[in-house]
Image 1 (cartoon, rainbow, N blue to C red):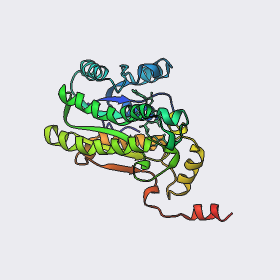
Image 2: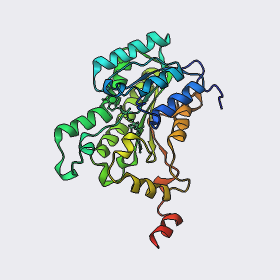
Image 3: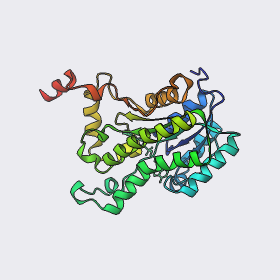
Image 4: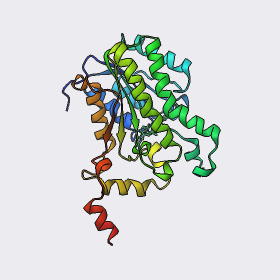
Length: 270
Ligand code: NAI
């Protein structure tokens, strides 16, 4: 269903790896709502080829960029403005990766070079994107920039490892840059803290199935899926949320404010 919520808006969507990616659903819905945008991902992810299908489907140009490279990001924002014919109205940062999680490193035995990589890819890249956009004066007034976070920023989920620190940093960057961009360009910056979701990044966390089911039972509405997360992103890119900024917005079916639920009591009483 389209209400043309993003008609006339130009955007950049990162992180669509395959059909399960949250960014993939955001791209489909942004297209449905009348936006034009470019798609971007790390050059290595492009080689898997899936993103081309999405590009065709959404009539979107694909611009490879390693989100940790300032040079790639400059190219991304410059080319996106050229291709789309003007300044950018919305940006989705949907990027996360931890070499320590990927390689199964215990939290008491982390590799610190990898830890820095986790922070660079999953959090500093958000700052780098915004700094690039600001320096190039690439954002339109009343634009909207979003990152995707997880509640491990506030509460401990042991298997989430150094990604917990990355998410805490990501959310902090949203507040600091949100302040700056709000004053200079009326641009809002927020993070959406999403339920566990069956994607490549999500299911890479050890024991994911168990905490997916736990979160589902701990949430009165159940886990929010990728599609509903995309709906929320669209509303945050639309003019209906112009005064929301510097927030970490919970999109979790009620998980974060539930103490215990009947579903969990039932499960634990078995
Ligand atoms: P995904 O695996 O589909 O997306 C992660 C993306 O990050 C991939 O497209 C990958 O190519 C990209 N990426 C990795 N390194 C990069 C780099 N150096 N430069 C540019 N792109 C790079 O998984 P998903 O779940 O859609 O992840 C999107 C965001 O949502 C991430 O920030 C993730 O942490 C967050 N999130 C995911 C949850 C889940 O359970 N799946 C829960 C809460 C937040």
